[in-house]
Image (cartoon, rainbow, N blue to C red; front, side, top):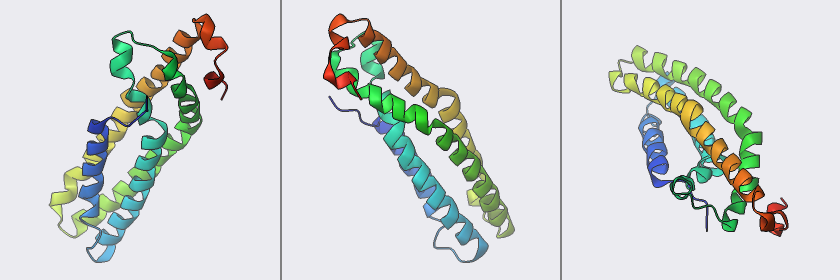
Length: 161
């Protein structure tokens, strides 16, 4: 069993990043704002896909009540995510500041085609913080509690991370 980022989340991330990247080659303040925003987004999305979103791949199995010993691999991932959560939230603050700069530059250069992108990215961050991050944390907690209730799980070396 492998923990993998659900495809729907990967596609959404790629689409958002691509929208910003299209402005990178443009000259002036707008292109510069796009390059800064792209760098912040790229690093942030990589952190999410490394720490948070792999846990969400377990949801379909958990919903069906399928918790097995092989899910113990989710426990250290959940702990790392819990440690990284504050950094991910701080990323959102930085990204919103970069979005404001990006939006101002877009308006100054009459690039209305990018006007809605800022709101789209802010809404994406809201969904992550209010739904996806808590869901990932709950997956880890559910697996931990489910495995703890099994006597053979306590002795499993895979739980010793």
